[in-house]
Length: 332
Image (cartoon, rainbow, N blue to C red; front, side, top):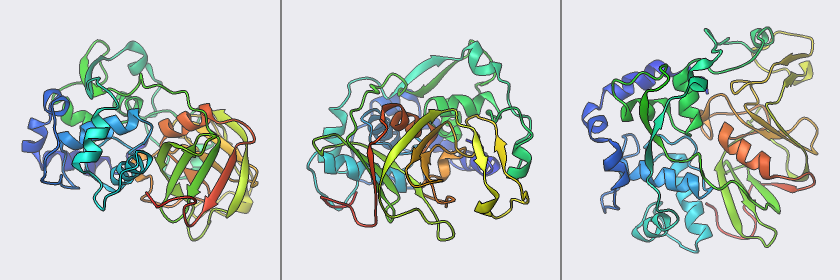
């Protein structure tokens, strides 16, 4: 999850020290619903707790960043839909009550940084151009902080705000993180629905019940995703990215096909789900903060952890339907 906007993130944290100072583990774990809605552009303990609970319930808010942004609101509405709740607001007392009943575990927990977390190797400099990526042996993380943030589905800004003064490159250091990695990961998926206009992916069980939701980046005007019904033909962790010059991506000069080695910062991220539409798939991304907020080259992008969850539970032959209007219910 390369932070091309890292400087902005860091400065953004510094401009609200009062909020960051009150954003500790106890404030988040003890957070309760309040009638005043959270601001969309500031860290909020209620939002952090809601995002962690959504993530654990498989209604992904994207990157857990403590802000009630577009992806968090999408996830809350999808969760409400699955529970039979309706409202024009994303977070209501009824949604909150239902959400906190999904898990009694603390939203924020302590974690001791391991030797594996800081071992690397880490990229000293990430290439800005795809042509230069093909020369690297692997597309790994750029720092232990980036790796730890992704491990716990968090933004680096939230990780830093929860751990003022902590060093993320020291094995043995104890830090606070989102309590998400022990979530149950077994899903029985009967169908996938990709909503092109809402930029979302939904997973339904064989009975038609909505069991998982993910914010997504779905194509672009230049390279739109296909319409219609397809099937899953492959699901692979740590994919090698293959560039076809017929794609004619903007900024890529190569006239020959080339490969980019695997890694979380590979253009396809940590997981690739191939579809029967040739050249199209559902995959991870090196930049989770941009999910639903940028464009893709025709494929469907999820965060690396969401792509891994979906890919590890999907089976070949599973139907994947691309729609502009949702089937069988209201939008989330």
